[in-house]
Image 1 (cartoon, one colour):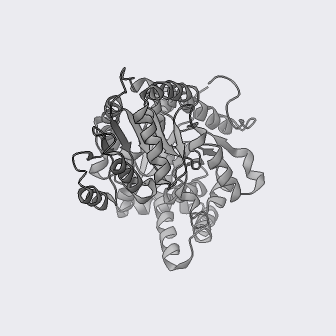
Image 2 (tube, rainbow, N blue to C red; image 1 turned 180 degrees about the horizontal axis):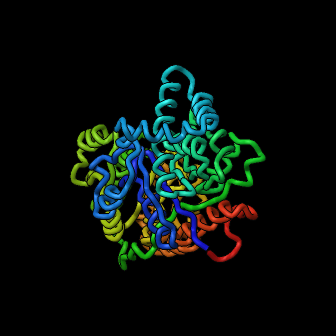
Image 3 (cartoon, one colour; image 1 turned 90 degrees about the horizontal axis):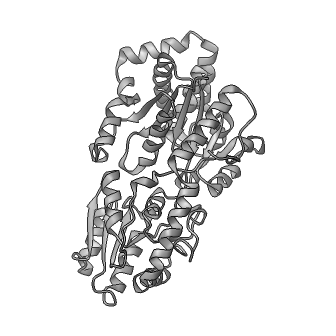
Length: 416
């Protein structure tokens, strides 16, 4: 039996901060799926940090670029106007689900225009299932493309920010209309359940974001004083707490250093804070790095740190744990589904500088704990967050809905 031909859609693809989507696509292709990757916008050059990203960027269909070509736009919408009732129903859905105010209406009409172009490309390519990651604007486009073309569609919901404005993004309507929803964890699924009808819940399946464990090698000696952060330099990541912790520990641990991989809107302020504290020799901003470069950085570090205020289930924690790097992070959202305090890492309350500093001090003071946490962390990732296994599970879900057979369960009940 042939596998469904898929399309993947996000706002920008590929991005250096969303490598887990790229891995998922690669594993689905390896399973035999033909996958057309689609991006609403053209990805910025700062995200094309490696050969893998550049190759994916070249082969990806850019929706907005195509929609800006008058002939392409007109041809696409003329195609769907041949079924006027369905076209008007889809247009009505765009109006119905628009955020409040004139601006919201205008944006949803733009998404409708983009959806017509996307749906035309999917139909021309013979795509039978469209999957979206990040359930915001691009998911609205996916929903409208499905309404225009009757192509089956689904989405992966992550959090946390989508749950800050659930009514703005109409996740209730998206959950109702999608063939199924892939939730990255139990906490994420429970949040979606808050804003959806109980009749829809059986279509909410848990598909973990995953990593390729073999990409991350264990370093035999993690007894040094090097800490690593990987993530966006934005308020939600709590980086000021990390800088404060390093400052407090500097005297006790004179060789302590911190590398920050990533970029974002708060970088200039964070760099200014580091300079004001005189920590330039200890804290280094590395900018965006490729997957291979992150793996290399994990191989050279001793402790991984993530003091976030809001998360889903961070892929970067999975990567660190796969590399057997002990982690210090916060007890929020789906993080405890991955990290168990005192077993495979340290969990502290979010925003608690004293607790975070103490946990970091504990790991730097007692290196024997690092090896135990590292081994337990890798075992956890191998068991539940392997990208190949999760892609196989997602493929099973997609195929089940394509065949209109029994619905899959919450998680696979047998080996995948």
